[in-house]
Length: 269
Length: 262
Image 1: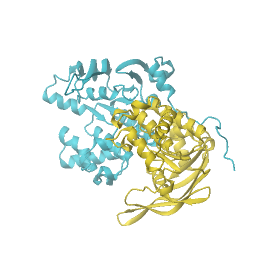
Image 2: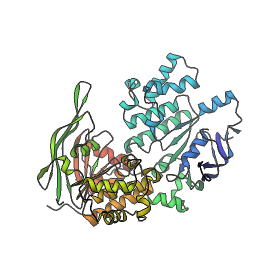
Image 3: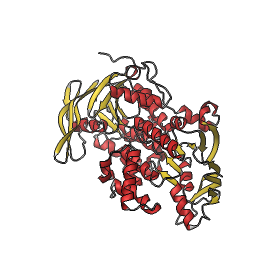
Image 4: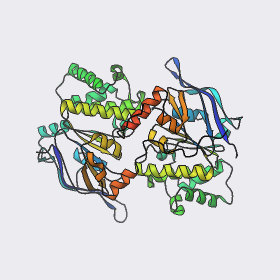
């Protein structure tokens, strides 16, 4: 049984106009995808292709217009209270915009302890200990706990968000462009960290990104999304096999690893 | 406006943190030549954007210029005459750089008026700049507000406004960081073409070594407010000398499954 699966999911947004008819826009069209325990799947696509909407559907932040999301074989709409609690603990989302994903008036301690308060049975001392452990896991210094989001760097805040997602020992973390805004060397260390955590705990990842380089480095299986549909699926090891024009376009946009031979030569004078 | 070489000389920026003064940029000197793209690279927080802001006299509150000057062909210029006249600027987040309740037309007219160049040929000049950046549907785009445009279109519009100033130099602060990769490539191609066609001198601030590899002629590496290495782009990638440069190049190449030679 898959950990989580989308079964023929579609999503249409409808705008409502005061006069005349609103505009319907279909953003997802008949998407089916299953994620097994401990697996890393990359979902690739350009901005606006529907990949973030899909991520939000998977965690229940949005309702599909048709189709269902299944968690351990059961539709997430049919889960009982206790099961819902389990679902929320098991499936976590890390957003791209970390300043927008935290409460600016909370300290780092409060941000990381929030899921511990709601989803675990830790007492105050237990939460504090777990928070320290989490900070260590994401390689942040312990004294960051008393700081506010505005006082830490973007890279540090993204690690705080990863720590928050890890807090309740999830089974799946959905990373929605979660490392895209970090410096390259921080991206590399964030991916190393996630891979290490996966080895230790057997978590699954859904890695949503537009950067093929990251997907190739991190995932075992890749899906390409274009205009709300999944147009291609291939193992990460065989990137050369990509066929679809949308995949080709993503590939052609990869920046070169090295500069081309001198363009304008040495400066004059 | 003419000028061949823009030099930032001995620039230092300090901020008051608690009761102590902290140097954010420390004695930085940098040269931008017309027709060339100089990249300023470094990790976030290394002082890249502060350098641009300080050179143009637009530092945020609480941050002060401690020393330094900007010269063009050896003549010192104050920040107010540099901005818009000698140096045009494009920034990272195009959406927040536009007034949300004003149309693109209002922005273009305001740019010309601020520079004292609003005349009978304004419409033609606006059209020419917009066509140059690939915004071909000029009439329609001029009527749009920022929220009605994609990130790529907004960045093109920002470049069009920069071209309107006819400034010989362009400071581009992370111009493609918020754009998707396909749009990023188009914007980089556009910048490269404009440098060649208009002989612009560009200071390209970026944390992405891929952007530097694609576009830069020369690279300066910034670490904690100091330039630690400065060299032609090939040397930076093939034979980096400073350990910070090595770290940046190594992390960049690791994304491609490549390793730094030697």
